[in-house]
Image 1 (cartoon, rainbow over the protein chains, first blue to last red):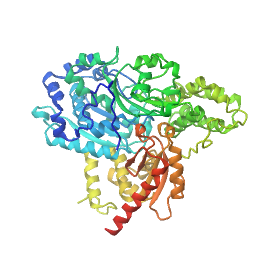
Image 2 (cartoon, each protein chain N blue to C red):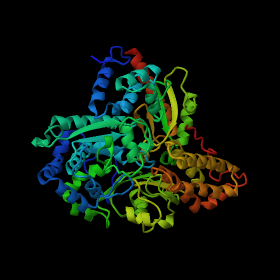
Image 3 (cartoon, rainbow over the protein chains, first blue to last red):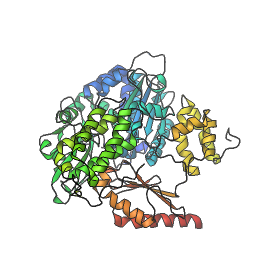
Image 4 (cartoon, rainbow over the protein chains, first blue to last red):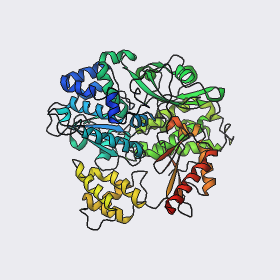
Length: 438
Length: 170
């Protein structure tokens, strides 16, 4: 079972019901659940969207798009039905926050989904979980059934004339399906390849209808925003970054875990105080701040770095999904780069050539390099390949592979050079990783 | 009673599929979960599974295969009764996932995508399974095991061996 952690600096908003049995609907209600939706039903859609805008809540899936604004883009009148789609395909390496939400507080996702439906005038929501999360899907399915039994879902929710249905859906193993348009394709029973944009999902989405797609953490945050008020939620975080975020600290730290901290919380403190510092008293070599697609940061770059979308962006990386991966001084960065790119090579859906070929060549180059057969020219070739993937694909997976690669080559060039001329990897324990995944 | 007169699935799963295809605005939306649930029962996507799923949804078998080959959890030949999936992605790798993977290979005498001779276990190196903060982690079928070391590997396998024995004797 995933272990729960806590730290005095935490501000528990989204995680406040974790470990309290709130997967049970009566417990959830006892802990203040399903109050927010009642308030929203009384106040109406425009009020909901204004509260969401005031909250400065930004999408926790990685893009950081303001949630209230996203909802407001959905046309009021639509010939086709509108949909709410919740992205629980959590697959970004370093990220396991949604895992805990579905395990401990599935009703917050359901309540948030109903609120989103009310706000945009939709009668149907989908909650899509990655296929590997079967036990979480079962927990969520039970929660949905319980909500139907209470009359919180169905034709007349909470005794009003408002209708809202929720369908849960299982994926079957695909990182790419976490991309919103590929997610819609998968839900329509197709290969998870991205759609070209525009049109954006808010206009033409699932089954051709206007669709709002939110990350599971984002939507689980929504009821809390409504309960405390948008403005109050905004004051917890940093400018333009409202509230708290679930940060997953993993890798070489003493106390790995998912911690809920205010947006803008200092990254160095997050590693040394919240995470308990580098494991075994070792020295910090690098940090991947927001899941494996975000460019690596050096210890000197995190001194005064606040973890929010704007500050991490300014530092040349991204907040992403808030998955902080801590790397100590005993780690080979070439091997780390290789393992990172191997993932993207495996997960590239193959639709766009720069991504399909680029990730493959990057993996080949890095494999050769790490094995000690690289040439000085390879280092620039790796950079050239990555640069030519950037911005040349339908979806962000190409960028997600290229950006971290560029970061590794730029910031750890010396380590790449140390692998030249047949020199064995200075950190090798296993030699080159086997990378058997095909 | 299932609408399929000659279903290869258990009556329970067949009934579930009957309901599933009607649930969505579009029948085809049932395809991906249906393939996974079918695999859970049959063990893999056999030709017969593909044929019946195609018929139930009303699309061609080719169309089903086209979709099925995209998803990494779907397979076209049997795995072991207990499919051990070892995550070696970055967070797990940093905490010794390759040692754990090696230990499983040693204990089972099989490599990536291998199946033991008795059909009890299969082994796979997999991408991130969403247990990064409890790394290194694995899944055996759908069950998570986390905070692993090479030393805990034999116990995990022993537990599944016992579980299988228990089922035989029951």
